[in-house]
Image (cartoon, rainbow, N blue to C red; front, side, top):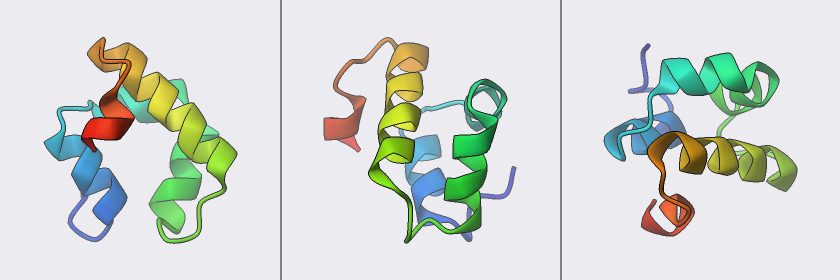
Length: 65
């Protein structure tokens, strides 16, 4: 998955989030971030952060990002 053009996806990838798994678990929300990372509704970010936290076993991943 190409992340170099999307700073949000690159940041999550660097934090160890499996982007393929995130996309599979939250396809609609992932598509919003992939399409326009500078204009993402808060509910989409919170949904993806919750999924990433569950995936990583880190409830504070949002703070670390």
